[in-house]
Image (cartoon, rainbow, N blue to C red):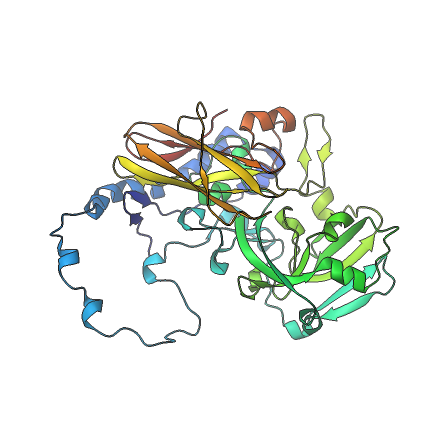
Length: 453
């Protein structure tokens, strides 16, 4: 793999190799403490050293004079034939982009039942995540299932329980929609204080794709749902964990999809091939992969993933359960932690905003740690329960600055500060951290992860 830093214009991207051993189990059980936080920080010493060493080399990439030989002399490709069509059966990115990839944390992937791979948000453009960079979260490893043998059952409070093949589902009227999917544990490390350096690890359990499938409401109607008594549905996957999640019936009958397509092709195996549930705006664990059964019931099911997992211990000692919605959130992806500004001048601050309750209405950006805010540009399209790209013009004078973004959705909800969340949720939460993220730009140009209360 090419681990050389990527240098575009006046901004340098650093390599990342995150090592966390078994800290996730300790953090889930006991929370973040100083020792665990220091261990995570030290894990990035090598990457930080590589970034510093690359700074001097990056100076050669600055715009050159009009007599630059790189533009005056014809390059090799201008005097020779290129590769033929279809040199590979499935198209691949340029070899020069090999450093942009999903990255794993050994502490989360040492065992297959807790696998995670993070999307490199810092290197993406627009709002769609390429399928090959879509984040992964597995509870028992992934499978490449033969679609000819896969079935979907719908049972419970319906007049006629049915079993569908993939072919039968694909014959039904389908729709395609763009939606974000975010793990409920995204940004979990930031609950205590910054422990990981880059946006790939703070926010990388987030992706956005175009999903194609049949509305779940159509299938429930086809089976004759008992509208008088139905209150919830239980979605069940066919992986080794038999992952199950309860979904309120009003959501199931709204915009939920039974999907087989993603970004114009069939789902990837690690993303649920050949069938997954798409629950727009809900935490990722509700988007059950390798979907095999939908049961209609009259009460929540209190399964493992909603009674002992994906819960938060509140200050009063009670567990918060069934937290479905991913609240309004945003993050600056460039400049962000692990990057370096190579000289003073103009920079485009860019990032992503999203809300599980609808469209993004506005994003504000601050370059002084939240003392002053200015409105960023929202780039089209702005869609409900979908990532929205924002941009902001910034003239860096070479002084220390703290960059923040604050999203507001169409319901009027304003993304909170971390201390505002702690005031309600306490200090022992793991999930659903949607606090404002801060990046400090040092006078040297280094960008680091900090926390502003």
